[in-house]
Image (cartoon, rainbow, N blue to C red; front, side, top):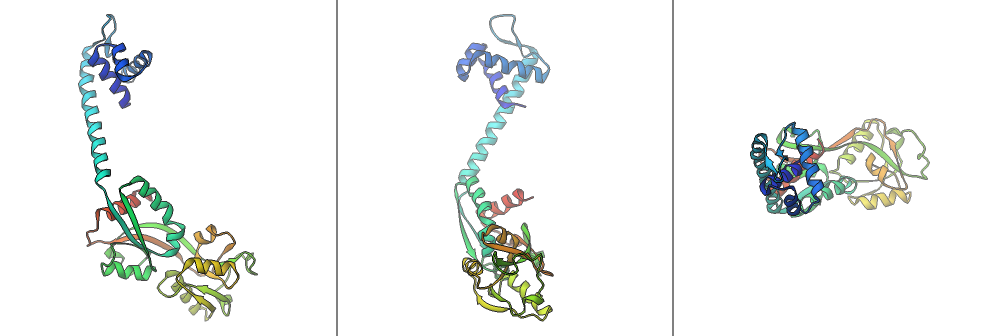
Length: 291
């Protein structure tokens, strides 16, 4: 049902004239007449008796008028309620997030949310997923991005953000850059720049290499993602990361690492914890947006 046509109809009914309604609505009279005629066609009834100069409602028109006025009042109330909620919703979205996701995925999602909610601001803390899980358990943070599955998954309400394979990232001029895949055994003695402990991708690399009795040459360990990316591009060594990172960075090639798991990252809160209105709004919005 077109609310605009209902509005035009009610103004014609109130003024008793198509020309007066046109003036009140700042429309051309033919446009008013067309709108009412299309409404009549969609409803299958005549709303006005046009046999006289004044626009008089038919019996059907009087009944439709009552219903139209009710619908328009409800629509106006809904708009006022929505506007009030948007104005009342203020505060700061605060969450902990791994740097890779914060760099290559979260900005677009958060930008759209903040544009939809101009009364909110955001604060992002960088940490590894293992540390974030502990922060959530200890209630030191309300929202955080964790790796699934986690041992305490039943404790969390979560929304999946991404599911990405872990790949080996090398410079585009690296001898392996044209390979279709790399094994953990081949990483033995290979120069690498990697995250410190506490990050899922580092844990996955360590587990994979331990199972293959492979020991890479860790030339540098750092939690600063831009530094790792720069070192890979400069040829200091390879690293491991999510496929989305390799696809986003010019000069880096992502190679499938045989046996490496995919990583599912989810925005989570503890079931038992009451979180801020702003954080709950972001969690609910992300659940709707990504469903």
